[in-house]
Image (cartoon, rainbow, N blue to C red):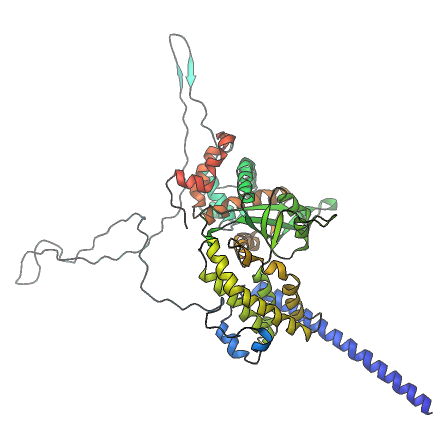
Length: 526
């Protein structure tokens, strides 16, 4: 009986131990799924900004582990964090743009003659001043038909018949000028209006252009723009530091029995922009399209590049840095992104509804690093490197020690532990930006360039074909590069579409947005 009782107790203890382990595993799994659901809800419906007021985080989480004996540096900092909420500026109305034409309407009093109409007084009236109120008016866009008339002339003496040649059109046999084509492209790729919406807008003006015809025109213009985008890609690859990223998009694929399916395709983006380090070289961004996310695509895009490459921790980029067969380093040097680290802690903070002291403290510490970057923005590379070595390096060393201490007490598979390990496992590339003043602390520059695709994706929903995706990548490259250089894409495309068909290929550089702006006397935004 005693042996039976002992065996029963042992079995019960083992079952309880197993149940406790299973409950812990399920609790972690539930927490992970809740974190994922909260992240997806936030990306779909919530605010995309990760900004938090650093002072508020300090007040909420004073109990966080910020002892000098653990961090090796003071936890509090009087410097405003990168996420500090800017003060609201209040002031008067901004004047209406001076370059707009003015149409004056003069409003005279009821007695606006030369003499006063007051009873008993007929004195002469003189103007002693005036008050001007300016209001902004809108004149709807209008269409007009340009008729190219080519008279045929005959010589009565020699019976020779002469006629002027057909004026060159941007697209042969297409009844559209370069201005109309540029308007359709800017509306589609800068203002995110799908073809069918533009078709409906034009019908309200009494112009019928089918969306299939718009897509056909865009494909022919894209073919003309390929050499220009290739030249822009060469300009990007010639930089010593470029940023890279990708974003998914739904691609329609033909299926069996004529039924269409979908798959996830990707836009890859590569950007060079060194204005933050005081470089005056023109910025440029180039998009590429692929039907999948294999690492072979960035490897092909960057096969001729050597220099710094700042991107996220996507495993497909690993082949850029080291040879898979030998493990030898290649000519591309990886640089990490602290915005990705902060984003992981921010997701934990949002999921926990502000109850994670560790996540709050991590965001505050990372915010102090971004505050240093704001102070040195636009400074020469040597100044940026010196300040990073003296101020950022000690904070980074303290942050690493703090992350190591915090991660020891966390469940290995928890989201907070994964956030800590993301930075610790990539520490060498995360601190590399301190070694060169040309580098950036984050990859936000290229993520800003992807906003156009993200906004457009909510409107046009999917890419109709792989060829359509390649054409879209061309136009996004052109429009976003114009935006980076402060150039009106409508004016630039109108001129380029009209000229590029007969422009010599060995002078393609003359059509680059920043070169075009200088030749046309336009001011490029700083």
